[in-house]
Length: 498
Image (tube, rainbow, N blue to C red; front, side, top):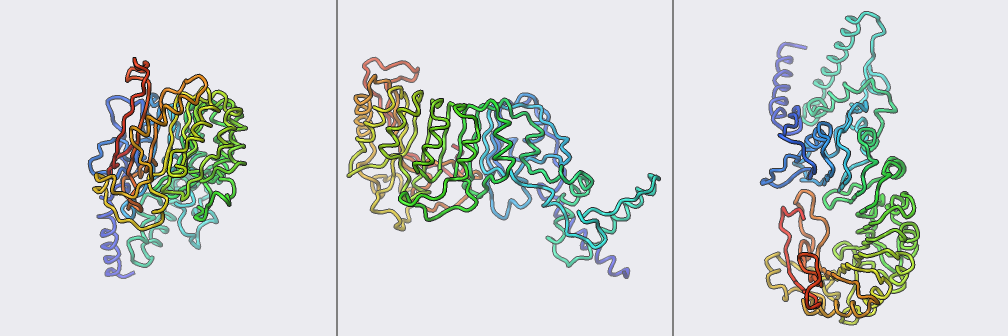
């Protein structure tokens, strides 16, 4: 190589190295410093909001806190995407591939959204195979007993690898492996056994943390990025580790491919998430919520209630009208079956539709009569009128102030309507244990993890609700026994997290 060519190669290398040194995620991560360890971690990755002051806006900060602190009892991680600007962001916990990481904290509550359980890091950090390298991509190691000879051999192949990278076609992304930290990680873990380094992220997590004390688990798909659990570690090993689980929330179907042609008359195959729900011991859960399952098929409902129904005190089965048109709705016979299969149920959250331009009084009566111990009930109605569905409507969020001008389902959900349905439910229930009923319409899905995304419908982020209760703010019955009903409308802003 001529001196001019060498100088040219050096300058190109500096051009690459200088900007990369200031890119978040490519440099060494600062250690986690705080005066005291938290008991609860709320992490949104990437954080998205320019006003975010959350110290856990980086997955490395979460990882370091869990290793350093014994105090974390609740861990919440929501993963999204900011598009091309998050190319340097890591989304899963950065466990050492040799299994040396150990978490001191033993949480009781674990909530995950959009988390990539099945990612095998070794596959992403292994460079393209070089002609002089071993089959697994690592370079030959000296068999000499002399440590100096082994060191020289290692340095030789290290330099040879770097030269090969520099000789590749000029393009910044061609050198991404070298400067993103992937090359360093590959070099560090190249001698770890194949079985160990081939573990997915969840397997490394299960090795690093005690899952046996978790009593509340939530696993949901993200609205930003379609990442669904698919590995055997998640479906086979994880349920066995969660020996104390009492409350389970599942969001999504977790199918390999989302089906866009779902109809209630022609139900699709059972969602893969059903396998996870049924993997826990029978009658071990007291709370079960399944949102966006896309089905109310008899076989699926029967399987869940037969397995967990007898022990449940809380049950939620809902699907957003923004994701399913029409929404799958529990039938009258399915509501009646709750009486025999969920005898301990005190809290129920379901979807219902208006019927014949009126409220579904027949199904309301079935609920009240089938669940004599029911105390709290939440019902989701459609916000949009059926006749306007699938029509293009360009409506800004400011039009929500003129709520009545929107193509709303009739009759309108008002305080008077809520009070009327509450009284009807009370009269229909044998012992009148019902204390609070909440009626909701609109978009109650989890907000986008990173706050960004284009609204596909005028209903996105619009919420309308009426709540009626015979209990006061102190939890004691109101003096006159009459329900107090409150109504409100809300547009969830760009960076709202609730």
